[in-house]
Every structure is written in structure tokens, then in C-alpha cells.
Amino acid sequence: EVQLVESGGGLEQPGGSLRLSCAASGFTFSSYEMIWVRQAPGKGLEWVSYISSVGNTVSYADSVKGRFTISRVNTKNSLYLQMTSLRGEDTAVYYCARVSDSNYFFDYWGQGTLVSVSS
Amino acid sequence: QSVLTQPPSVSGAPGQTVTISCTGSSSNIGAAYDVHWYQQVPGTAPKLLIYANSDRPSGVPDRFSGSRSGTSASLAITGLQTEDEAQYYCQSYDSGLSGAVFGGGTKLTVL
Image 1 (cartoon, rainbow over the protein chains, first blue to last red):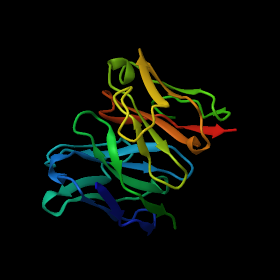
Image 2: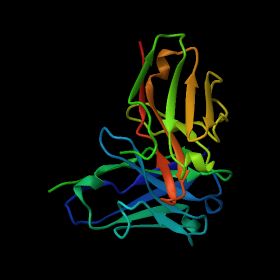
Image 3: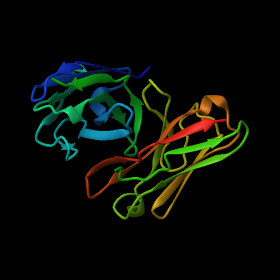
């Protein structure tokens, strides 16, 4: 059974940093591209970042470019999102999701972790 | 403002059919990138409902169907059931943004 479990969310002050983790199991993690998607309270889904299966290709939404860094450690079946210079508008539930191997859609999602940015 | 445009809400009575539209542009749906749909029940993670415009993952009832034409796509739900009440999101890829794009979401209410 495919499982994705996020962790690392919490309350942080504006300008602060947080590192989110996503633990994957039930599939060959190193064979799949992964993404982070966020959802602000009461709002829709927003794609945040993408990483290729081996980690050599990454991309970011303009809203987080230069502040967030996506990475992965395939030997640990883990995906990460390092978030710096946090702003109030980064407050959201952050989901990690697996990119399907046949098309750019997301076939499995984690349960999400809440990041709140406030003083 | 989402890159893909969806109606904020739709409604229907049990047993009826509803359709949710998703309108994009020449850099996403119009560029022949596939459209995918997700269902999100409040308080839970999104769930893949339709992929590659019209394909259903195993376990998704055939009451759910999708289509794409030009710069738009649509999701149809037939034989509405109360458990279909949820938020529905379309998603595609945008070549200008070099990333995934979502619609703003449509809340389905089953009256």
C-alpha cells in the first residue's frame, strides 16, 4: 500500500524557517517524481515545487522561488521542503504527492501538514 | 486568481447529473496538456478522480467521467449521491509556468 506521511509543520514567525519531511512507503520511491502542493485555509490547491526521481531537476512556483528548496534522499525514501523567509501567505496545509509515471498527474497524496506563519 | 477557471459551485438533487467546467488557455489545456480531476472531502487530502482527460483510476465509479476539447475540459457526475458532496479541482500542466496548475475548485452540493 502506497503511503505518504508528512511531518515538520508548525507555528513559525515571519522570516523564520521550517523543514517539512515526507516519508514514503509501499512503492519504489527512487523511481518516481514528487511534488509539494499547498492549500491555504479555505482556499484552493497551489502547486509549490517539483523534483525528478533522482533529484537532479527541480522547479518552483514563482511565489516560493528563492525561498523554498525541495530535495530528496532516495536511500531514506524521503522528500523534503526547506522553507526560509517565511511569510504570512505561506500559511497552508502542505501536501506531498507522487507524480504518476505516465503523465503529469498526482496519484497518491499524503494527509498534509499545517504550516502557520504568524507573530 | 487561478490559471484554470472553474465555477465556484454547482448543485443537484440525488440522481441528477451535474457538469463542472474547467477553462484554460493556449499554454495549458489548449497546448494539448492533459487534464486531471481531484475530489476533496473537507478535512481530507485530495483524491485522484479522473486522469488523462477521461480515464478513471480503479475504484472510481463510472458515474464520474471527463472530457477535454480545445482550451476547456469538463467533469460530469451522473446519478448524484449524497457522498459526492465535495470540492472538485481540475489540474493540468502549463508550459509558460513550467509547472502544474489547478483550477480554483468547485463545491458540489447535493440537495
